Image 1: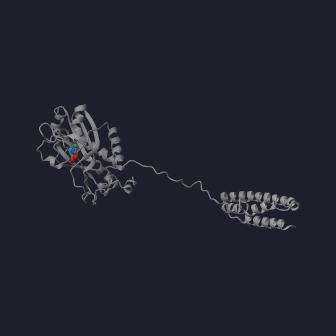
Image 2: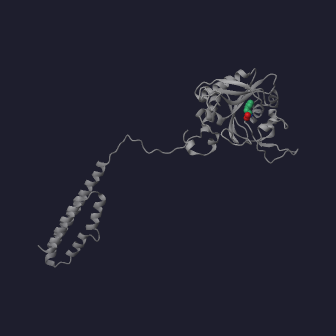
Length: 345
Ligand code: PHE
């Protein structure tokens, strides 16, 4: 046997052994490159065969081709085997949950707002709308709060740099949703049932319970013989459906220029069930809203005859309702843009 044939046989042996030991596809590819690549050991050896004397070349060439074919077949065979191993080894659990796709959701205040709209629509209330930049007239005057009235101090707000013919500032960022009351009366007349939800503004130092910008819901019902009893029934229903549980209500006298009598409505604390806790300042009761029977001057401003019709009105902060519903103790969280807070809802 010529030395060339020997070399070929030895290399074949070496290659087959090493292919057999390849642990994965990557190793197999490396071996293929090492032996059969452009500068691979077998490739180079095969090139040398071409330089042999003619007598030797024929036989050795034949052997070389056989060896190459055999090795290529072996490669394919082992590749198949390794491929199969991949699938055999991998444990596939079809019951595992898939990768979650992140999706957003409505802000907690929007959720409460929509809940309220549903509750009141089902009781036959219209959903009313009003401007945030409001005239002094609808925000104060029409609500029985004249220019010099001290009630304006309680609702100090941001005046806009715009004056009327008398040189008085006449546009404000609305201080409450009550600005919608007279607007609604003018537009729809009596009888009337509506709620207005939206953003309002106050010149307020912020703390755990106060914000300069927040949301309110206003309720207004005008009809013949409307009394405080109607107000209480509607509020009870609102609390019951919003909080998914019944709550007691009690009234205290309260002053608002646009209602007479005016009341502050307190609800039994849902967090401690009336036993007393930090949220209700250990009284068992939480102040929830302002309300009362619509003042005759306001009905008149809205073009409604106060001798025939009466009505109730109430207003409250939507943040306050949401805080009670979810047990949140800082109003500033709502507008903080803090995703750790928001993602809980
Ligand atoms: N507008 C009042 C406020 O913002 C609440 C209120 C509304 C009181 C309707 C009575 C009637 O404080």
